[in-house]
Figure 1 (cartoon, one colour):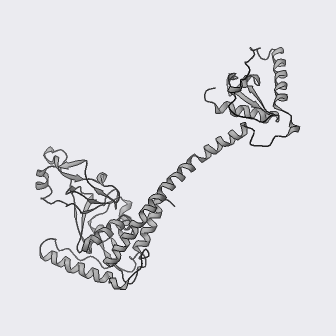
Figure 2 (cartoon, one colour):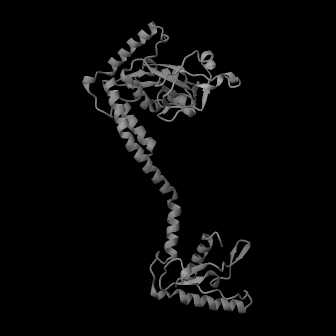
Figure 3 (tube, helix red, strand yellow):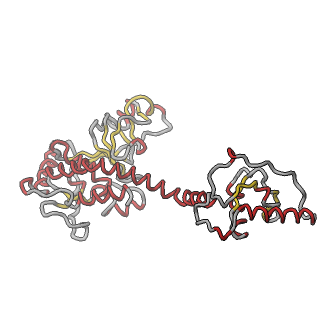
Length: 372
């Protein structure tokens, strides 16, 4: 299970009401929903938000899973007010420069806080393009195009582009609903009506408003958020351990191959058997054959190679093996149409093995050295 899959499992428990217990004294999601609707009507009467068309009823078929009896299914547009951003014309320099931070999706760290942005817009842009409206520090942002469902919280007053919405819970004692949405929106935005929209990597005002939310009472939301934060350090530790395991698995085949070859050339891969002879005996047989080939004119006589000093030997080998220069045990090596002389400056070890196995070891040694 990847770290993201584990986190998704925790969020799945959270939005299904399985992460923390339900407590009757905390009320119900229905009671919270009615409080939100009262506040929504008050804001409409006060002219702070526009009255919108009623959202469609939630059918049984739409409900994604079972939720506790004290919870209620709602649409996002019925519990929050949100605004969309804008991008001033790029060709007109009067809108861009020092001034108010302008947020793009690239400025939004996953589940993080925005303290600075790569670009800013002028006071003139705020007045003419954004109608003087800023998203204040503390506002919850969510992307709904390309990277759907990424959320961040503003630490500074700012504006943002048209791929991002500012989300304002209509009724939110102590910012509890905002924190709950901050945790669950990246997950729930992948389901329901928004799922098909995500395939096109974008949502629209209708699909955002119709997004389904399983709404618990505020006190339970607070406990859910606290539990997620409590589990976060364990998720971080799991992610680090998983990363190390992935790196190990990636390099394991090559590392294992090298380890096997290392054991092979050190005489530790198989047992030594006295009846198979010694590397010295094989070496003498090779020298006799080499002299015969020289007499027959099939190979040229070469200068004797220097003795192998003790400090040249890179590791211990069995008593029945022998260190030899590779040039003493072969004449040349053929690769397709190309022929190469033996690498006389390299060493090999000889054991009292069958000839074909011995040549395989020499062949492997040849291929393993990029300097030959």
